[in-house]
Amino acid sequence: MMMLAGADVHGIILAGGQSRRMGTDKALLPVGEKVLLRIIADGMRLAGIGGTIIVAAGDGEREETYQQALIGVRGPIEFVRDTYVDSGPLAGLHASLSEIPGQAYAFVMACDMPVLSESLLGRMLASASFSDDCPDVIRTTLNQPFHALYHTGVVNRLQQLLEQRDLRVMSFLNGLSARSLSPTPEEASAFINLNTPELYAQYIAQHRL
Image 1: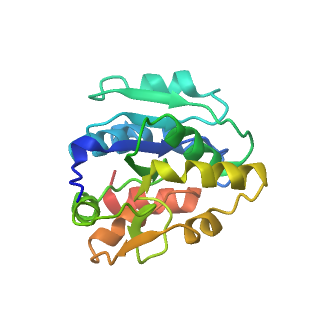
Image 2 (image 1 turned 90 degrees about the vertical axis):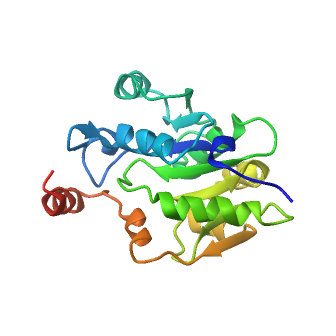
């Protein structure tokens, strides 16, 4: 039986998209005194994630800007570029998981997710710890692909799909062995995403930021 703790887990932030619906880089949207990318990275550290935080930066054009935004974040941070260009979030997930040595889990969030639920992450880690097997993904019953733990063993499957140009995230997700948890109403706020100007403005107004 494996024992999984946050210190053993890496973090992945998918920030390589084009932000077409938002019209500006979502990772750099200000929320209070920080940008989203920094909020997510700090949140991962506060939640106990002790491994490398890997930022999937797409083609790398924004890497220097992202580096500046993350100055001062505790622990190691790496930036990766997509091996399969113009291939969406699966390419970022592939590039990130490929950087992690051995058999391990990584906690994955998209750069437009402002809320990390420490309680939900804790339950995901506990679910992995009390098991004799290593499911490909530990996720929720909300059928959301992110705010989830992915095992490095899915890299080969990702590569197959990317080479076939099958870029459907949910198709990939539904083909994995999974353990699913039911989030509490409070934990469900982790699946807020700010991918349009309207959603961003609404979130800022609701939280008076």
